[in-house]
Amino acid sequence: MLWMRLSYDKDVGAAYLRLGADTDDVGTVSSKTFTPPGAQTTDGHLVLDFDDAGRLVGIEFLTPEQRLLPRVLAAAESPRP
Image 1 (tube, rainbow, N blue to C red):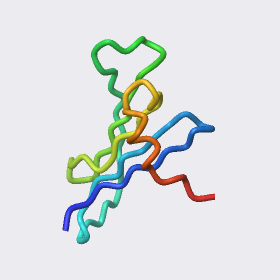
Image 2 (image 1 turned 30 degrees about the horizontal axis):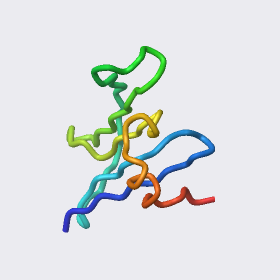
Image 3 (image 1 turned 90 degrees about the vertical axis):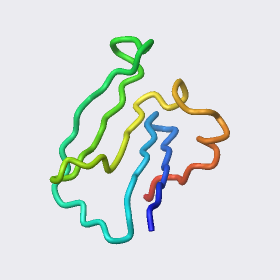
Image 4 (image 1 turned 45 degrees about the vertical axis):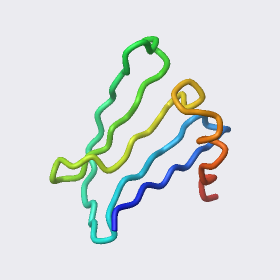
């Protein structure tokens, strides 16, 4: 089964969308920073995480308030302490 899980840490100002399947063993993750069109050079970056097979396994939104709808952030999980 495929799933997505969004967590949001308002204090840090970041949200993370984890993508996966019940059978996934992510292993090593490599990250690449991506700046979407219209983002400022210091704001709005996304960090894309890939597993060792090159599959996208997560997206970190460094300024989620600018990129995600408020109702999406409100429904997101809080980070674990």
